[in-house]
Picture 1 (cartoon, helix red, strand yellow):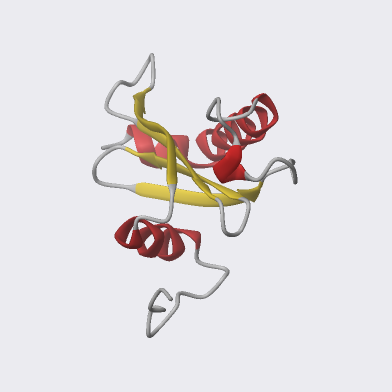
Picture 2: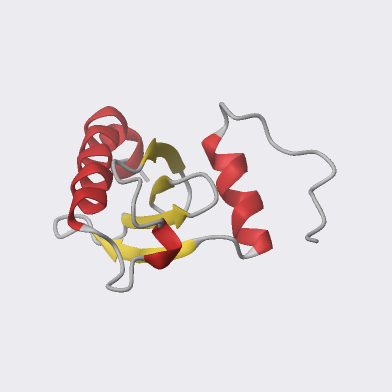
Length: 112
């Protein structure tokens, strides 16, 4: 049996949920710190949470960080059982979310 966190973060706080999952090691790191082509100081990370079938998308410039979670469109096979890593459908959803986040937070990410 795994111990539970005494104060789980609220479900509407994806950044806190990501931090907690990173501390417990219950994430699949699909992409870590991919630099933007135009602004290499801005990094994209994508993680999978097998227990909730979610993808966490993180954009950061080292000072400012934005995190959002999106449900994986796949129910089977389970995220932990996808032997070739990130599925194409997951990739499409995660990168689409990253683009929306970029559009929404571009000024804050670029104005370091």
